[in-house]
Image (tube, rainbow, N blue to C red; front, side, top):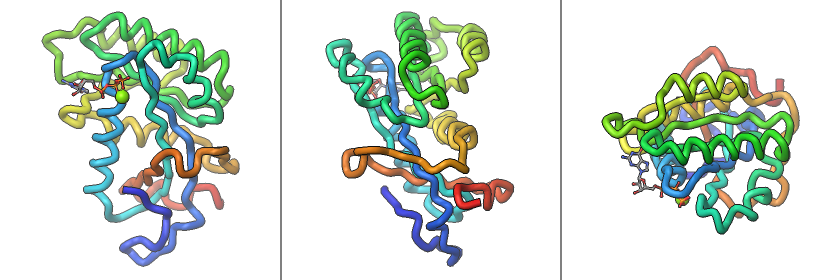
Length: 201
Ligand code: GTP
Ligand code: MG
Protein backbone atom coordinates (compact mmCIF):
# COMPACT_ATOMS: atom_id res chain seq x y z
CA UNK A 1 0.00 0.00 0.00
CA UNK A 2 2.79 2.41 0.75
CA UNK A 3 5.54 3.35 -1.60
CA UNK A 4 8.54 5.56 -1.36
CA UNK A 5 9.00 6.60 -4.92
CA UNK A 6 11.74 4.20 -5.86
CA UNK A 7 12.29 2.89 -9.38
CA UNK A 8 9.07 2.44 -11.32
CA UNK A 9 8.17 -0.45 -13.59
CA UNK A 10 9.26 1.68 -16.52
CA UNK A 11 12.73 1.76 -15.05
CA UNK A 12 12.75 5.47 -14.36
CA UNK A 13 13.68 6.66 -10.92
CA UNK A 14 11.03 9.03 -9.65
CA UNK A 15 12.55 9.58 -6.22
CA UNK A 16 13.35 13.23 -6.80
CA UNK A 17 9.88 13.92 -8.12
CA UNK A 18 7.80 12.76 -5.22
CA UNK A 19 6.11 15.58 -3.36
CA UNK A 20 4.71 14.72 0.01
CA UNK A 21 1.62 16.36 1.42
CA UNK A 22 -0.42 16.01 4.55
CA UNK A 23 -4.10 15.62 3.84
CA UNK A 24 -6.78 15.52 6.51
CA UNK A 25 -10.36 14.28 6.25
CA UNK A 26 -13.00 16.08 8.29
CA UNK A 27 -16.76 15.76 8.56
CA UNK A 28 -19.64 14.50 10.62
CA UNK A 29 -19.57 10.96 11.89
CA UNK A 30 -20.73 8.30 9.39
CA UNK A 31 -20.51 10.49 6.27
CA UNK A 32 -17.95 8.03 4.87
CA UNK A 33 -14.50 9.52 5.53
CA UNK A 34 -12.87 6.19 6.34
CA UNK A 35 -14.70 4.53 3.47
CA UNK A 36 -13.36 7.10 1.00
CA UNK A 37 -9.83 6.53 2.24
CA UNK A 38 -10.21 2.78 1.95
CA UNK A 39 -11.66 3.07 -1.53
CA UNK A 40 -8.89 5.39 -2.64
CA UNK A 41 -6.07 3.37 -1.14
CA UNK A 42 -7.45 0.13 -2.50
CA UNK A 43 -7.96 1.60 -5.95
CA UNK A 44 -4.42 2.84 -6.03
CA UNK A 45 -3.13 -0.51 -4.97
CA UNK A 46 -4.78 -2.18 -7.93
CA UNK A 47 -3.73 0.50 -10.36
CA UNK A 48 -0.11 0.40 -9.37
CA UNK A 49 1.58 0.62 -12.72
CA UNK A 50 2.79 3.47 -14.96
CA UNK A 51 3.57 6.58 -13.04
CA UNK A 52 4.00 10.09 -14.31
CA UNK A 53 3.67 12.40 -11.37
CA UNK A 54 4.35 11.21 -7.87
CA UNK A 55 2.35 12.84 -5.13
CA UNK A 56 2.51 11.15 -1.80
CA UNK A 57 -0.37 11.85 0.51
CA UNK A 58 -0.10 11.23 4.15
CA UNK A 59 -3.73 10.73 4.96
CA UNK A 60 -5.11 11.61 8.36
CA UNK A 61 -8.57 10.19 8.82
CA UNK A 62 -10.25 11.90 11.75
CA UNK A 63 -13.15 10.82 13.97
CA UNK A 64 -16.36 12.71 13.21
CA UNK A 65 -17.97 12.25 16.59
CA UNK A 66 -18.43 15.59 18.30
CA UNK A 67 -16.70 14.46 21.48
CA UNK A 68 -13.43 14.29 19.51
CA UNK A 69 -13.79 17.77 18.01
CA UNK A 70 -11.18 19.28 20.32
CA UNK A 71 -8.58 16.97 18.78
CA UNK A 72 -9.19 18.24 15.26
CA UNK A 73 -6.71 21.15 15.28
CA UNK A 74 -3.96 18.65 16.01
CA UNK A 75 -4.89 16.87 12.81
CA UNK A 76 -5.32 19.81 10.45
CA UNK A 77 -2.27 21.67 11.77
CA UNK A 78 0.36 21.59 9.04
CA UNK A 79 -2.01 20.01 6.53
CA UNK A 80 -1.62 21.16 2.93
CA UNK A 81 -4.98 19.72 1.95
CA UNK A 82 -8.29 18.87 3.54
CA UNK A 83 -11.31 16.94 2.34
CA UNK A 84 -14.45 18.03 4.13
CA UNK A 85 -17.04 15.32 3.67
CA UNK A 86 -20.82 15.38 3.98
CA UNK A 87 -23.51 12.86 3.14
CA UNK A 88 -25.84 13.97 0.33
CA UNK A 89 -28.76 12.24 2.08
CA UNK A 90 -28.34 14.26 5.28
CA UNK A 91 -28.71 18.04 5.36
CA UNK A 92 -27.23 18.31 8.85
CA UNK A 93 -23.95 16.85 7.65
CA UNK A 94 -23.79 19.57 4.98
CA UNK A 95 -24.30 22.25 7.64
CA UNK A 96 -21.55 20.60 9.67
CA UNK A 97 -19.28 20.55 6.64
CA UNK A 98 -19.73 24.30 6.30
CA UNK A 99 -18.63 24.83 9.89
CA UNK A 100 -15.55 22.70 9.21
CA UNK A 101 -14.74 24.85 6.20
CA UNK A 102 -15.08 28.00 8.32
CA UNK A 103 -12.85 26.55 11.00
CA UNK A 104 -10.22 25.61 8.41
CA UNK A 105 -10.39 29.04 6.81
CA UNK A 106 -9.86 30.65 10.20
CA UNK A 107 -7.32 28.35 11.76
CA UNK A 108 -5.57 26.12 9.25
CA UNK A 109 -2.71 27.11 6.99
CA UNK A 110 -3.86 29.98 4.72
CA UNK A 111 -2.67 28.10 1.65
CA UNK A 112 -4.52 24.89 2.48
CA UNK A 113 -6.35 23.32 -0.46
CA UNK A 114 -9.87 22.46 0.67
CA UNK A 115 -12.10 20.02 -1.16
CA UNK A 116 -15.75 19.45 -0.40
CA UNK A 117 -17.01 15.92 -1.01
CA UNK A 118 -20.71 15.12 -1.16
CA UNK A 119 -20.44 11.43 -0.44
CA UNK A 120 -23.00 8.59 -0.82
CA UNK A 121 -23.91 9.85 -4.27
CA UNK A 122 -25.12 6.32 -5.01
CA UNK A 123 -28.10 7.03 -2.71
CA UNK A 124 -29.59 9.53 -5.14
CA UNK A 125 -33.17 8.56 -4.31
CA UNK A 126 -32.62 9.74 -0.72
CA UNK A 127 -30.89 12.97 -1.70
CA UNK A 128 -31.44 15.92 0.66
CA UNK A 129 -28.63 18.22 -0.47
CA UNK A 130 -28.89 19.46 -4.04
CA UNK A 131 -25.80 19.32 -6.19
CA UNK A 132 -26.29 22.92 -7.31
CA UNK A 133 -26.53 24.20 -3.75
CA UNK A 134 -23.26 22.56 -2.77
CA UNK A 135 -21.55 23.65 -6.00
CA UNK A 136 -22.61 27.26 -5.40
CA UNK A 137 -21.33 27.13 -1.83
CA UNK A 138 -18.04 25.63 -3.03
CA UNK A 139 -17.66 28.30 -5.71
CA UNK A 140 -18.30 31.07 -3.16
CA UNK A 141 -15.58 29.65 -0.93
CA UNK A 142 -13.07 28.63 -3.62
CA UNK A 143 -13.33 24.96 -2.76
CA UNK A 144 -12.92 22.00 -5.04
CA UNK A 145 -16.21 20.14 -5.12
CA UNK A 146 -17.27 16.69 -6.21
CA UNK A 147 -20.01 14.29 -5.34
CA UNK A 148 -18.47 10.92 -4.56
CA UNK A 149 -19.40 7.40 -3.67
CA UNK A 150 -17.06 5.26 -1.66
CA UNK A 151 -19.44 2.42 -2.44
CA UNK A 152 -19.29 2.61 -6.24
CA UNK A 153 -15.90 4.41 -6.40
CA UNK A 154 -17.49 7.31 -8.27
CA UNK A 155 -15.14 10.32 -8.34
CA UNK A 156 -12.96 9.00 -5.52
CA UNK A 157 -9.68 8.88 -7.44
CA UNK A 158 -10.70 11.99 -9.35
CA UNK A 159 -11.08 13.92 -6.11
CA UNK A 160 -7.59 13.06 -4.88
CA UNK A 161 -6.16 13.80 -8.33
CA UNK A 162 -7.88 17.18 -8.46
CA UNK A 163 -6.39 18.03 -5.08
CA UNK A 164 -2.95 16.87 -6.20
CA UNK A 165 -3.15 19.12 -9.24
CA UNK A 166 -4.01 22.13 -7.07
CA UNK A 167 -1.14 21.69 -4.63
CA UNK A 168 1.95 23.82 -5.14
CA UNK A 169 4.69 21.52 -6.35
CA UNK A 170 7.64 23.85 -6.06
CA UNK A 171 7.82 24.56 -2.32
CA UNK A 172 9.46 22.23 0.13
CA UNK A 173 6.77 20.37 2.01
CA UNK A 174 6.81 19.75 5.70
CA UNK A 175 4.81 17.13 7.49
CA UNK A 176 6.15 17.69 10.95
CA UNK A 177 5.81 14.86 13.37
CA UNK A 178 3.71 12.84 11.02
CA UNK A 179 6.11 10.10 10.09
CA UNK A 180 5.08 6.70 11.20
CA UNK A 181 1.69 7.80 12.42
CA UNK A 182 -0.22 7.70 9.21
CA UNK A 183 -0.06 5.89 5.92
CA UNK A 184 1.67 7.40 2.95
CA UNK A 185 -0.13 6.81 -0.31
CA UNK A 186 1.43 7.54 -3.66
CA UNK A 187 -0.83 9.07 -6.19
CA UNK A 188 0.08 8.18 -9.72
CA UNK A 189 -1.44 9.77 -12.71
CA UNK A 190 -1.35 8.32 -16.16
CA UNK A 191 -1.49 11.60 -18.04
CA UNK A 192 1.82 12.44 -19.67
CA UNK A 193 1.29 16.15 -19.58
CA UNK A 194 2.12 16.53 -15.92
CA UNK A 195 5.37 14.69 -16.16
CA UNK A 196 8.30 16.68 -14.84
CA UNK A 197 6.19 19.26 -13.05
CA UNK A 198 6.98 18.13 -9.54
CA UNK A 199 9.12 19.59 -6.77
CA UNK A 200 12.56 19.30 -8.25
CA UNK A 201 11.82 21.49 -11.24
P1 GTP B 1 -16.60 8.34 11.73
O1 GTP B 1 -15.35 7.54 11.71
O2 GTP B 1 -17.53 7.94 12.81
O3 GTP B 1 -16.34 9.81 11.75
O4 GTP B 1 -17.40 8.00 10.35
P2 GTP B 1 -16.85 8.01 8.85
O5 GTP B 1 -17.09 9.35 8.28
O6 GTP B 1 -15.47 7.50 8.80
O7 GTP B 1 -17.86 7.00 8.10
P3 GTP B 1 -17.58 5.51 7.60
O8 GTP B 1 -16.60 5.48 6.51
O9 GTP B 1 -17.31 4.67 8.81
O10 GTP B 1 -19.00 5.14 6.97
C1 GTP B 1 -20.19 5.16 7.71
C2 GTP B 1 -21.22 4.26 7.04
O11 GTP B 1 -21.58 4.77 5.78
C3 GTP B 1 -20.72 2.83 6.81
O12 GTP B 1 -21.80 1.96 7.06
C4 GTP B 1 -20.36 2.82 5.34
O13 GTP B 1 -20.49 1.56 4.76
C5 GTP B 1 -21.38 3.79 4.77
N1 GTP B 1 -20.88 4.48 3.58
C6 GTP B 1 -19.71 5.14 3.44
N2 GTP B 1 -19.59 5.67 2.22
C7 GTP B 1 -20.70 5.32 1.54
C8 GTP B 1 -21.17 5.56 0.20
O14 GTP B 1 -20.53 6.21 -0.65
N3 GTP B 1 -22.41 5.04 -0.14
C9 GTP B 1 -23.15 4.33 0.74
N4 GTP B 1 -24.32 3.87 0.31
N5 GTP B 1 -22.73 4.08 2.00
C10 GTP B 1 -21.53 4.57 2.39
MG1 MG C 1 -14.11 6.95 10.27
